[in-house]
Image (cartoon, rainbow, N blue to C red; front, side, top):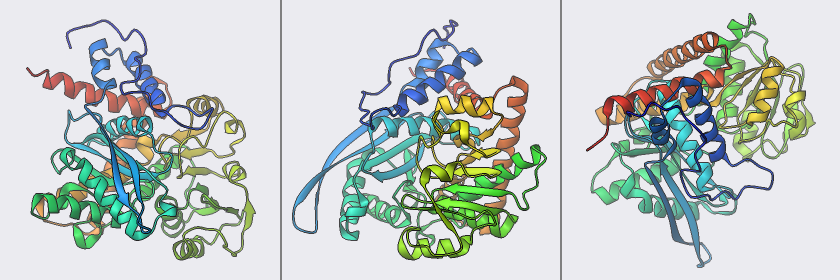
Length: 439
């Protein structure tokens, strides 16, 4: 840490290049590293500090066999990446998706580090995934895949090392299988090895709605800053899984907002007078998607959904949805990133020039990891909280994080994403400096 020279240039990828995304898409690890470099330069971080923050503590790649229902054996590829543990064990979700890559998982692990630091919880960033198509797998096949993947990564996870959680296409049930598999290897029940579990297996009240609820906390605070009332505010929600669906329900039921557009990976709908989100949620839960919904709604394309006239746009699906191609036509006043990386850097610049307020992902979707922290604490203590206690603590943490980000953005005259990253990076850099090097 003694070197005082400023950051001179962008580092090469800290992990082997394995980006296999569709042509024309951005390598997420390049994007995450570039974000770090930009804020490091702005903050005047030493080159040595930047080098430490840009690299990863552990990258595990596994290939494992799974017996399918028809008797054939398929080989699946999985990952678990640990970015930084200066402030505590790793924390991050597990995603099952046919497009999972090592670089994508690595980028999300890095962003998890800044996210945990931003909301001041004692975790570092981690992430994991398996390249698979869950829609083509039976429940039994999914269980066998989950258990074998858990066995493969079990040497590098644990309540004091690295704690997985649900993410894209993973659920409470998958977390239960992971906890059970890990526990069998330890000869005792280890509740704290994962979070996002069912309530009966050490899960936390409020965890399922936590990402959506945390996102709405910062949306309400942003609307207040802009002099806008939440009552009657018009929302468009892209993605109708756990986060998007709960955001729609909570926004309508608790805050009097009007959801004028919503969609998932199969279909999208709009109604300028407001959608019946309760009916949509019931349909989605019963059929697995919004496809076939017949309520008072007009069908729109996925592209059109993002451009609907609204006050708040909530991307709650996958990355790179708002790009330089459509950013100039987005009609929202506020964009709240409930998904990870839904806005590309080029689109960010366009939105900023147009005066559209972007609530960045490491702030807007931090409610999930915050309540995961609560669950981990409850598991370690074997003392569990009520949903009211969880929600009150979540509100306090998210409110404090928003205030800190808003204040720094005003002081630095920068956008909220830059301010959020500066707060997260500075916290980790300071922790690294205080700990020093061993030996």
